[in-house]
Image (cartoon, rainbow, N blue to C red; front, top):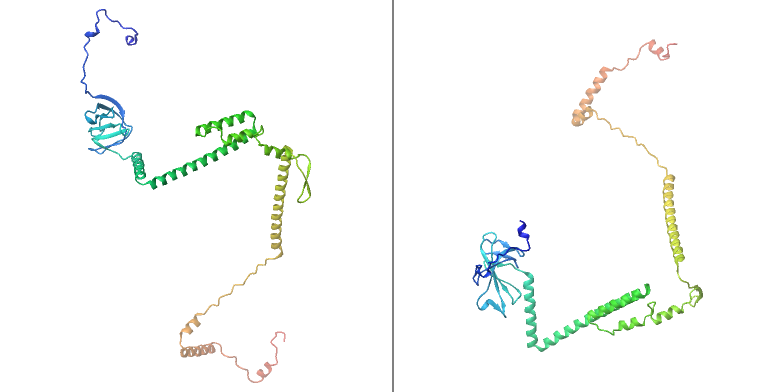
Length: 353
């Protein structure tokens, strides 16, 4: 194994390279090329799909004849086999459209972007033909194109104005280095957009001072006298102008907290008053529970129920029979006769008598 990695190999003294036999391949021999499918293919025999990007060991050959070249560019043919049925599939290079062309063995799948590019090219060609035939149509197209360019220029001016405002903020917040960086960025962006030099935005940037203010703004700031009392002409009220510092911010925060606490206390008092009102209303009105007596249902005797079902004639007869029976069972008391009867009326019922 060590002999494979040597730098110098032994060459005998009588070695003649001209005597080494060389194999001659035919000029039109196929060349094996490892490649990936440039588009998806469906096999014509087994209807299986070979998707784009799949690797194959294909055979390549140069196309012969009149169609073999396009503007001096050689076209090639590639041979592959279907992975399911092993049918040979061939496709060619298409230098005219910078694409590939399906030849035999399968069909190329539909590709949206391919048709979109073709449709755009056809539309452009149709527009050019219409403009050649109709001068008014060409004028309308030029007007629409000029309007579109004006709209793009307006949008570009808005972007430049926004960048100018950002540069002012950067100038006011930091030192001269940030200002220089902002100006360099704006200039580079304008050069990239093709705006050139000497724009209005650059002239305004030159008019700004170290604080990032123009002359009018600086005069306005200088006119304000901080720490002095100024009279308000509308209501004749003295107003003191001073700069806000950390102490003012702390006082404002404390005032906000006090106001929030006062609002919370007021809401709590209102809730307590509402609860007290509800309790007072409940205590003022006593509640008495009244027990109602249940009404007893009268039992209807079986005799009356039976009598109700009997007709009136029979009912009268039955009542007479009942009266006779009661009279027989409870006879009336007999009145005493003679003296005993007369004396009995004056006597007492008590045992003592």
